[in-house]
Structure formats: structure tokens, C-alpha cells
Length: 232
Image 1 (cartoon, helix red, strand yellow):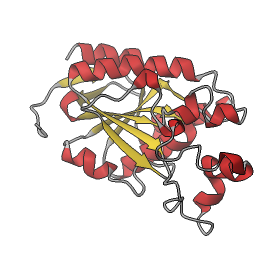
Image 2 (tube, one colour; image 1 turned 120 degrees about the vertical axis):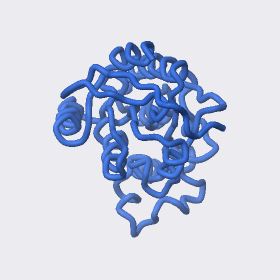
Image 3 (cartoon, rainbow, N blue to C red; image 1 turned 60 degrees about the horizontal axis):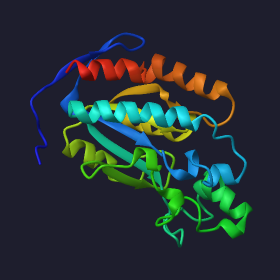
Image 4 (cartoon, rainbow, N blue to C red; image 1 turned 180 degrees about the vertical axis):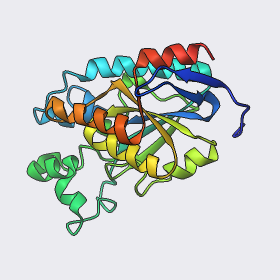
């Protein structure tokens, strides 16, 4: 595999200003676009959470992934995925045990224990509309941030990645915490505003956009990125 490739520079129409990226050093980091959170019959849907915004986010991700693959960018899928015995959950002494939504929901309804966000279940799989390709990377995580307790940083460094395009759910939880941790590790973040969906009130999404644009990175739409990638 060619881990270090010649530069392929494009300029993205982003906020607060355009940003030049090297496509060959770019990864689309797709956060938790799995059945649990975006599909009928998944964990959110089963517990009555509104997933009506998922369809548009799935379509935006499809468009971006097609453009990114054609241009030669890397694709990395993250998914929330506990071991069946919950040995990687942190246990009752961990705040993750008490606050992570999958853990909370499975404890509140014991009949669902081991059926949601658990390795080997349909619920933890990436939704069928975004089926990962053989060349894509899948990373299981057990915390909101994709960098905590995983080999994501090692994978990105192995592929010489500098720029990360973040999509997925939820904007204000797993997407944001992954983006922030990536920022601290030196990755240049672009949040794809129409390819993410928030958890809770709409102001959660607005505040995340504001925070990223001002303090952590850049905002761009799927169209902005697809146009830039097509010109590469």
C-alpha cells in the first residue's frame, strides 16, 4: 500500500475562510453512522428518539464519500461497539457507565442488554446505505471520542493524514469530541455541516458549529467539498 503519496492540493470554500488541503493527506472520518443511531429498529428508534433527520445526513454522506473515494482521500468509519461482556465499558466506577447513552438505555431496559451498540449485532453495523468498502478503515470505540482508547491516531499517522473531514452523529457529542481530540493531536478539522446530525435541541448543533468555526477549525458543506474534490 502506498502510504505516502505526492501532494494533490485543492481549495475548499469553507468558513471562516477558504482552506487549502492535500487530498492525499485527507481522511473522511465518519462518526457512528450505524444502525443504532440512524436506522428504523435501531437503539434510538426503539427508545423513541427522533431519527427523522437521519435520511438527509445519510444522503449527504453518500455524496461526500463518493467524491472522496474518486479523488483519492481515505475513508475511516467509527462505530460505538462494546464487547458482549462490557469489559471495555469502564464498569460502574467509570462515568462512561453512567452517562454514555447506550449504557444508560440498556440498563433502563434490561431486555435490550447485549442487543444495542454491542459487537456482532446489527445495531452496531454501519448503515447499509453507507456500506464500507474493502479499502476503508473501521475503528470500534467505547467512548464518545474516536481517539480515546483506540488506534485511530496510529492509523491516521500511518497514512500520513493531516486533514480530517468529520461527518456523522451526534454533532454535539461523538462528532465534536472526536474533532476536538483530533485538533489537540494536530489534525486540521473540517466539520461537514449538512453531513452531521445533532442530539437534542437544535441549538446544540448551532453551538457546535459556532465553537468549531471560532476555535477549532473550519465549516464546509458537502457541496463545497465535492466541488473542491472534483477539481482535483
